[in-house]
Length: 255
Image 1 (cartoon, one colour):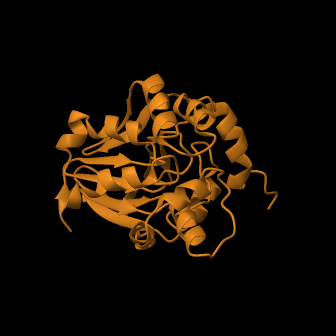
Image 2 (cartoon, helix red, strand yellow):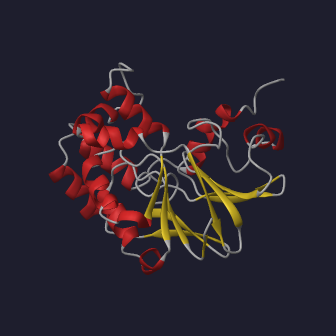
Image 3 (cartoon, one colour):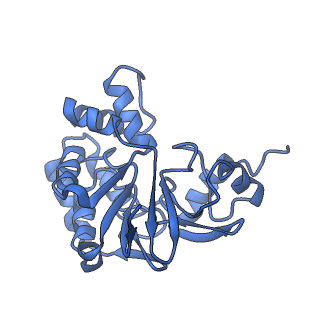
């Protein structure tokens, strides 16, 4: 397995092309050995445009699927009748048959060697499930559960899913969440992470009013103005997101 000096990690793009373009223009992303995507790439206003840009980068991009990507595939293939995210059916309908097949082929995890960090496992939510929740303040027993099957040689886990960046230790392993490129909670901007030799959480500012106007002009989703205003401006606070996600990490389970 080759060892990489720098890896740029982009998670939860959610089909927001202006945010993605801002991150891809960052000098440290341009210079990175690889760009790793930790899922939820397409479920949003510009799914095909985001896929086209990322696939144009060829082998520099390494893909991991998220639960929202899986839901779009299942919806298009008739394996589910609805998608929890209201914009999901619109995004699914925009995908070509080739896009659906491509998303269906993406792995759930990927392991790379990064100088200074050793073996790094990339996933969407947790290494064993693409939608279960772990948070910066999840209890130690919860981390024991979700990391139980991770090989001992892996000392760093990079996940996404909750749209809030953090770095913490869990039983001696480093856990990194880069936050969300396209749908951040708590702080506006396109959030991502640079790995190697350490971990560097980044946020890229961009012209959000112009991006909202662009989405309204280019996206056919009927509620796009409301959607773009809510998510690009990060009007969901981190406190609200933690309150919503908290019960899902098992913290209230009496057992």
